[in-house]
Picture (tube, rainbow, N blue to C red):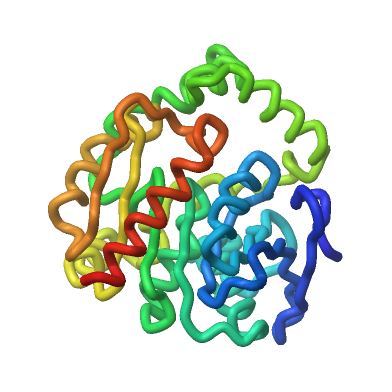
Length: 277
């Protein structure tokens, strides 16, 4: 059943050969080049999609958080990383897309990393914004500690510069209702760990050192999540083959609320750089 609540504006869906239904939004249909982005829902992230659609034919893929999947981990739970990746691959095959740019922000990077591992030939380039595979021990745990000790509103205050964004985020949650809370226990684990696309950290590190896809890592200097994984992020900075790495001074985790146009412009700059190389 199409999850239209998860999209602000018109939502579409396609049923894959395996029976799974993928909900998506589509913008910039008149542009020849395809850019795909994934997220749990497209409300406060929609301005980024619309800015991207000024130059690209953009598909926003809703990443499922419930339902049956044949992708299982060693403990018998749904392997959400593989599920999101296979859904993305099934989608592009069903729509008839041969090559595309991919942009993911936070949890949205996970399907992109699945494509890097399994179908790099289809990726023109990959904007892995505000999250990279974690190859070192976590440096701190301020994000989760803040939720536990001070609550979600305090976390939101830390996650954005413009406090008007708190109202927008709360309004988003209200419009989604139970669909924003209906998460299986393992969803969050996979959403925060793109390295789990690989069978081991050693395999993941080897893949980073042998990247064949141009990758752009973008972070904000005031992002709590960036600092929670600081050692890992700085490690991948110098070892991911051919990648670009940038830290924007003063920006926080919810950059899509504070400056959505900047997110799109950073992607445009990277893609242009790839084309010229």
